[in-house]
Image (cartoon, rainbow, N blue to C red; front, side, top):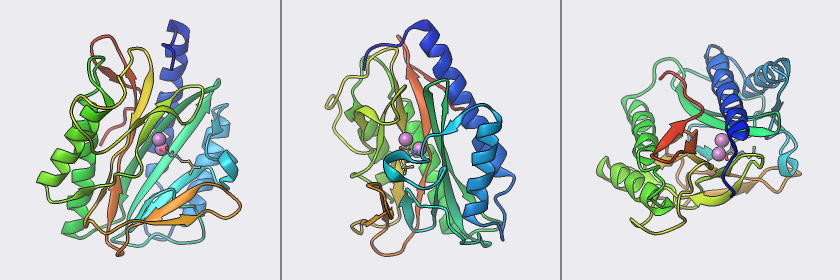
Length: 253
Ligand code: MF3
Ligand code: CO
Ligand code: CO
């Protein structure tokens, strides 16, 4: 990816802010009884009202405006008529296109009161994202991010998903480099100043091989844990600066 110019950085900031605002907006509706389709409509309409588009809608045939990944769904869960229930955990992943630039952010919500084990994996996933973000520095490589995430997650007794990860982002939704959630220090692609990436670790309770399933009429796949145990994820879009990183999709946790 070529470095962004000052005006392009402004546009990435705007897109990131709107994605964060949208994720914050939809959070008030995450309650027992609401369906994932209803959450999808809320985000779709909010996004259009801000003069923006939802990037997932029509992306490689993907049918909805957000991904809603419930409990054992690792990522790319497709909204449907499933109603949320007390005790669920659900990742809502919002990607906004504003003036041609993408902001991509997600978080895992707890629906009402959840089990201690659900709280624990959500917390570990959130912290894992920050462990990765702290490695975003122009002298580092993607492997440094992955190494830090995997080390942290392993210490906590969880498993980072290796097959799926973060990505370069800008005027394209998914570009180079791939940003893994495991890896070796000093390996992988260099982190170029004034480009943007996402850090989005997916964390599982067990090492069971993941299940890959097709999204209908689309080349997008969705993923479940192999054994029905929980998975949690958080995601931010960040700008790599000359001395570190700037989170473009910041929201309160
Ligand atoms: N937002 C997801 C990511 O973090 C990608 C979703 S692609 C879709 O990269 F087609 F499934 F929407
Ligand atoms: Co992403
Ligand atoms: Co995303």
